[in-house]
View 1 (cartoon, rainbow, N blue to C red):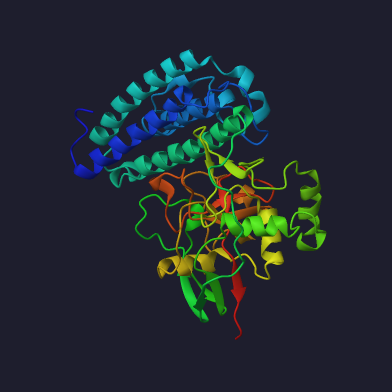
View 2: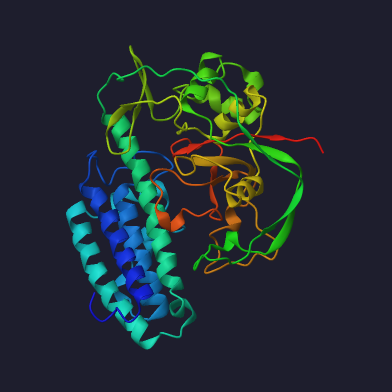
Amino acid sequence: MKGLRSTAAQAHRLDRLQALRRSVTAVLHEEPAHDARAQLHPCLSPSAWHVGHTHFVEALWLRRNLLGNADDLDGLDALYVPEVCPKHSRGPQLPDPARLLDWCDHMARRADAAWQQAYTRHRRHGMVSRHYLLHFLEQHYAQHLETLRMIQQIAALTNHRADSPASRLQTRDPTWEWVDVPAQTLRVGEPGATPAPYDNELGPHDAALAPHALARRPVSNGQWLAFMEAGGYERAAHWSDAGWAWRRRLEQAAPHHWRLSEQGWYAVHADGRTDSLHPDDPVMGISWHEAQAFARWSGTRLPHELEWLRAVRSGALDQLGAAWEWMANPLYAFPGYRDFPYPGYTLPWCDGQHYVLKGGSRWTEDDIRRPDFRNFYTADMRHVFAGLRVARRQPD
């Protein structure tokens, strides 16, 4: 990208943005093959919508909001602004994949030129001077890329042929190596080293933590199988009322991407591969309802996100980043919260129904793989590459 390499940091960030753009559009060429305009899951948009939406949002912030040069976006808000276009209505409005990719290529070229203009003429603008807008858009591409991997996994589950694992999954006892934490005060919500934190990460304050302990490792596939074989999915006593109502509607009493053959359980991955399940790998593909039921069955509990954050800061946890980890608490705004850079990213979801997830999965990009990042989903979502790590209260 000639003319944009005035600083090493700027060049690095622009290269990263371009790489994420390419990864997003590449999904339309990758296996498993699927109808890019079809809605494969009621809570997910068609994959083609995510591809178009990410390019639209880059143009919206860079060319319309910053440079005031985006007449070509007129009319596209009705398709690519989520609040305007409900998920179920997006597929029929999308162009065919070939036309969409041509449009994305055109948008990428215009964006490259616009970045050059932004760093030449608006270098002192608050969204440009510290590369905030670049980081913000990188994170936006990264989040949608992981969502595209979720769609790929659903396509793989729909299209895969039954397989046999190379080895049978074995149970593991629900025992833990505990990391004990005494009562203390944790400083939370500082801007820190992240150039573009989301608004729900900010609001400096001190939080008092009671004595507690976290498991050093997340719950494993083998431990989850032990829960299943002990009747964990069949006993209402392990579940909340809402969780049991959800469980009774569940078609498969096993993690989302597990499948069963005569030789035992195996996994279907987002790239279409099937593989044996290792008993000591972190379990993935469960909802908050399931995570809570496992914790009750095992005599433990889910951690609060601030307990998890303290343990991560001290370097005490192992196997981070293999699966998102469900927290006990719903999303909430920190003291002193302010909407930024736009209203609507956080507060609508501070409704007591969206639970926090921390850490990241194997499909999470580095751009959002940071301890302070707060992912959030409703308690019934099990396609989101999530597992759990248990905690317990310590005596005072």
